[in-house]
Each structure stands twice: as structure tokens, then as C-alpha cells.
View 1 (cartoon, rainbow over the protein chains, first blue to last red):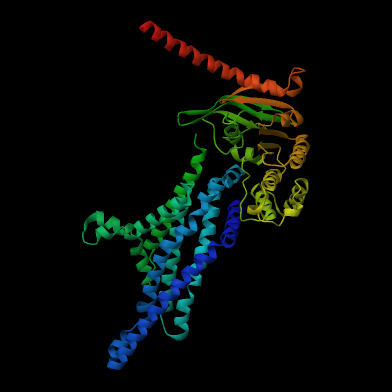
View 2: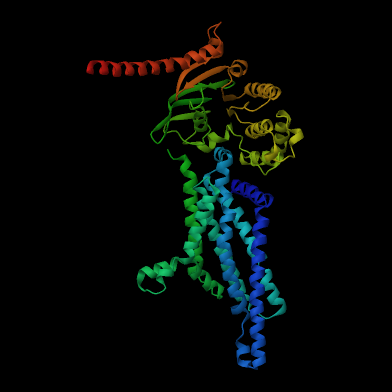
Length: 257
Length: 258
């Protein structure tokens, strides 16, 4: 564990020195702010329309959670599909290219500890990003009256989603020494997880059930709606576990005879 | 201290090294010589535990580098051909990281850090960023990182490459100092380097050992260069001979066809 933390510490420092972390956070928050602004404008406009129409029943039904926070979270998730490959592409590929992989693998450190260290670092970065994006609902809470519980559940979902994405990114980076290949294959894998249930939209049967279970937005959407169920958490944890296991195998494969 | 036994490494069908064996005792500096592509780096990567051999074993202080890898790796300091520096890190931070990774704790780490900065002559670059260092300093920072945990065994892949003459002299002196109570394997193309600092020489050519000898047993009057060239030429000559024979056969075939 100590070794994993040593590696994680170095990785986190590298994110901030290089300075990937600042760029990624800026892009994430700027885009988030833009979505938030657009969604609020829309909310405001609709509200004024109902006021002008003097329709109290419709005004009653106006809901900040549904009209602002939910779409915001879904948009942020898409932004993560693009940003996470940029965060994780260097993790292993860069080490291989610049030769520091030899330092890591000849040190008395288990490959599992190397993977854990790198995962912890990327996970910290993602969690910081999600936490900073909490500024948007905070504004809503200060000036409006949204349901905080539902927001918390949605952000928990976004955090899980980010953690799962990062695990996939580590794996794609571990199989290549080319960062661009790492990024593109990670992007492809994440997007596939996103759209995997599309063929199942129309059909029934066990095949489409399976695709729907594998589909990431399906689980994410439940949490965004304010429902935290074991099933969804298990899904995210299994994606993380499988991806990290594959990463460990891929790093370990250097040692196979 | 280091026992290399019958190492063979295949990359697919390509045989990188074949049946390589040699030994280095405690306090010995072993010069590992060979032309480019002879398999020096492959052998050193296997000894350091970076990758396994297809067959054969390496014992470091009696520990098998493959099956008792963690314990064996604790005893080794390894400087690869390209110093494994993180370009965005400062020299001091890098050396701290290298030390912690090898299990050094706070108090020991500070002492070890001060020590390697001193012996490798890194004081004036300690706060510089690794990516901005000259080749010579990169090499020395890599060396400092490899010895920070005071390993019993040092594996140095061309440690003096890219250094200027004064730095070469300093690094050689440093290696000689380190070698008094450790086992060092260093690879090089520079023959005088071997005669100056090594106790023993192993020459490898086309993947197998062609000579293993203590330097003081070399016949008086023959220079290492002669030994090296004869060892390699022997192989080459052998091949050329075969090639000539083949040519003759072809020629004979043609003449008989006429």
C-alpha cells in the first residue's frame, strides 16, 4: 500500500506540473458553466412564459432538478467521455516511451501496486473535478429550492461514472506505448459503453436485456433521477474491477516467459 | 554474488541471447563487452528483473530473480541505457521518489539523498528540472537514482556514454569506489574503460559468451583490444568460412551443370 501511495503521489504531482490537471479542469468547468447557463436561461424563459400566460398549474410543475440538474449531469458525463482519455493516456504509455517503466518494474514493487498507484492518482483528479462541478447546484441551492438529495445522488453517479472511465483509460494506456493510440482506444471504448444499448431500444429478449445492463447511461440515469440502487453501484464497481484486473495482467505480461 | 546460468531469450523466433552464463563475485567489477546488438542490454534487463528469460536463471545473492523477484530486486541498483528520468520532475524530487520506491524511509532518505548528491556531483543541479539537464547530468542523476538505496549489486548499462572526458573520469572513479564492497556489472564498448576499472571481463558476441576471464589472467603483452577482436573475429571468420564454402558449392554446382 505504501508503494501505491508513493506512486500515486508522484502521479498527482505530474498531473499538476505538466499541467494536464489545470487544462482538463478548466475545460470541464468552462463547458459545465456554459451548459448550466444555457439550461438556466431556458428555465427562466419558460417560467416567464407561464407567468405571462398566468398558468399556476404549469408553474407548480416547474422543477429545477429535472430541468437543470439532470440535463447538466448528462452533459458533463459526455464531456468526461472526451476528457478522461486525455487524462489517462499518458499513465503507462508515457512511462514506456521515456524509459521510466524500467525504473518502476525493476524497483521492489508489485505490478498491482503500480496499477493501484496510478489509479488512485487519476481517481483523485476525477473526484476533484466532480467536486468542483458541485458549484453549479450550490448556486441553485443558494438562490432556489432544488431537492438536495436528488442532486447528491446524481453527483455520486457522476463520480462513479468518472471512476469507471478512468479504470478503462488505464487499461488502454497499459497496452501501448503510443499515447494517441491509448487515447483513441479509450475514447472508443467509453463511447461504446455509452451507446451499447442502442440496438436493444426496440427489441426484447435476453440479448437486449444484457446490452441494456451493460449500458452505462442506463445506470447513470437512474442515479441522476435520485435513485441509488445496489444494482447500479455493483455495475460501476464491476467495470472498475474488470478494467483494473486487465490492466494488472497487461502490466504483468512483461514478466511472462 | 551474481550467477548467470544458461540464459536464453527469444523474441518470437529471433534468438537474442543463447546459453549465456557467467559469474561475478562480491567486490568484483565485471566489464560486459560486445559489439552493438550482441545482447548486452537484453542480458542486463534480465539480470535486473525487468523481463524474464525464456530459459535459464539469474541468482542475485542466492535469490532467483524470477521466482524471488521482490527480494532480489531490493538488492539491485539498475541504470538502463537511457537514464529513467521523469522529465517534469526536479532532480531532488526524482531522487526522493527513487529512494522511496526502494523502501527508504524519511530519516534514511534524507541522509541517502545528501550522500548521492554529493558523490555524483549533483549539488548545483539539485533543484533543476530533469528534462532540462544535459546528457552528462542525466546520466549522473540516473546513476544517483540507481545507488540511492545502497544496493549490493549494481547493473550499469553503458554508464559513461555521452559524458565529457572529465565526467568520464569522475564517473569511473565513482564506479571504482562503489565496486570495493559491491558487485558491479557494467556494459560498455570502450575497451580502455574495462582495463582501467574492471576486475573481470565477459565478452559476448551474437548472443553468446565468447570469453570470460579475470583481467589479471590476460596474457601479458596482449592488449584487451586484441583479445576482443580475436574473440569476435573468430566467430566472424567461422561464418565467413561457411559462406565461402556455400559459394564454392554453388560454384561447383554451376560448373558441373555446364
